[in-house]
Each structure stands twice: as C-alpha cells, then as structure tokens.
Image 1 (cartoon, rainbow, N blue to C red):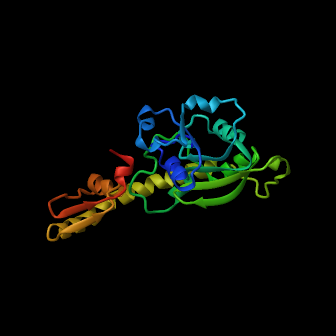
Image 2: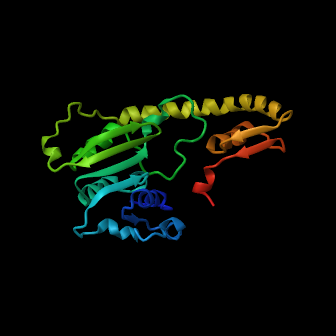
Image 3: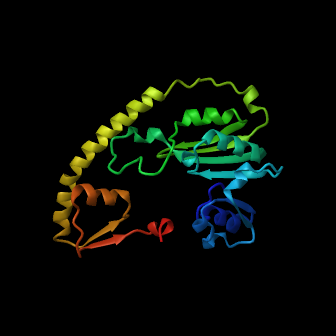
Length: 239
C-alpha cells in the first residue's frame, strides 16, 4: 500500500482476507494511527521506494499518489518492478477529463497536485512496463487495474495511437474556468431561495462537504438554529 495514509485500505485487507500488507508512508502523524496496529501490517519508510531487494508483491495499491509525486513515471516503473508476474497493480488518480461537464461549483484543482491524467495516456504509459489493463472506470478519478504480464509490451500493439492532448487539455481547462466562474455567480440566486426556506422551517442538510462550503463562500448561505447538519464521512478524513 503506497502512501497508505491512515491505513484504512490495509486494515480492510487484513481484517477481511487475513493477508499481510506492507505500508509505505513517510508521514509521522499517519504512521501513529490506530489502523496500523495489527500483526499483519508492516510500516515502511518512503525510502523503501528505492528498495533493491528481491521481494515481490501479489498486489500493489496506489490510491491518489501519482499526482503528488514529482516523477510519476519513476513511480510506475517501481510498481511494475515490485509486482509479481501475473500480480496486480491498482491505480487511482485524478481525471483531467472530469472537468468537461458543466456543473462545477467547487474547485476541482483544490489539492496540492503536481499532475492530472488522461486515461488513455496513463494506460499507454503503463503498457511500456508490461502492465496489461484488465479493468477501467473513469469518473472524477481514473480507476485502473493492471496485471503484470512478462513481455506484454513486446507484443502489445496500440491500435489507437494517442494523439497529442496538450492543446485539447489547455482548452478544457480554459472552458472549465469560464464555467465555474458563471456557476458561482448563479449560486447567489439559488441560495437566496434556500435562505427563505430555512428562515421559516427546520432544515436537515445531508452531506457538508465542499459544495456546502461553496454555498457559504459564494452564495452567502445563512447558518442559523433551524439548520441541522448531518455528515457521516468527514470524521474519516479529519479529527
């Protein structure tokens, strides 16, 4: 589990399947989290990325890591090197094409990401390291499952050579900037109607994430004693 954070995935694996998991994370705060307290979980420092031992893995799990790495190609090469032949690599990264829709209010580029990815380019890059795609799901994130197949790249023929996506990505970002600006201006009109309802009724708000923050920041959403906030997920990511 590369950059295992608070260890939720690792703990799920050991609890459900009784497997051993090596967790790589340099964050001292993360490594002290209770999810790591299990005999089948081993904590490793990030220097393990440069490990030269022969130890190989059945599965390498990389969830929202590549976008933070200053050299994602090197990280892909490392994962391909450390997975067994016929083993699996799971990758989850931000999908730049998710900004194509017209319903953005909160900032998609909110995190400290160095990279965003196009699915076809990432799949093509992984094929260079004998990683064969077996599952794909593209939404706000790109979910890819690869199987390591020796010499796959030697026989793999890219039937649809990827085009240069640089210009189309630039236009995609420019269109997104215009869309989010317009949407945020329209929020005030929507929130004014919601404020009218809240002033007269008891209101439950289910889910208090970034969209809710946008209502406050851009729409002058009024929080009063009539509002009851319900969110069962924020405690997973925050204290």
